[in-house]
Length: 221
Image (cartoon, rainbow, N blue to C red):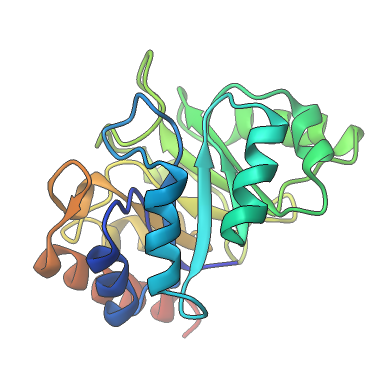
């Protein structure tokens, strides 16, 4: 599973920038209301530019299984991120595609996430990873809101056997602190490295990756 993901990539140049900076993965958004949403054709152009260099994660919100599978197969995506209100059964139905289950947290700590993971385990639908984002009514990610990092009791970046990816308002200025306090497996940012929605700022992106790499490396020292 990736350690550093740059989400909401909309241009091939930004994907190449993420690879050059040392990120492990990019997120391609297929949720039409998002300002970072892509068509299959646009996503295909990006994927051609980074073949073999970055993990390609498709981000979906309340979309049908057939649509998700089509994107995975046509674009050769490495994993799917479910960022909406999808039923637990969809994770199981998508097997063997790796699924990252996003949780938009409303309360400090991880109790609500663990309750959901327990329910997923009962139907053998444990996700490949868990992504934590900040809750905002009516919005599915990319809000820039920050989580409460100090109330996460993770062991080696894992929550109940799944790698935990921290998201929610991460920027070059706070990602190091977030990693030191929450001790996640990895981190994910979209708006935190942008000059405008969907357009990544080269200096911010490079700084974010450098700060995240240093903080993640320090966790294992």
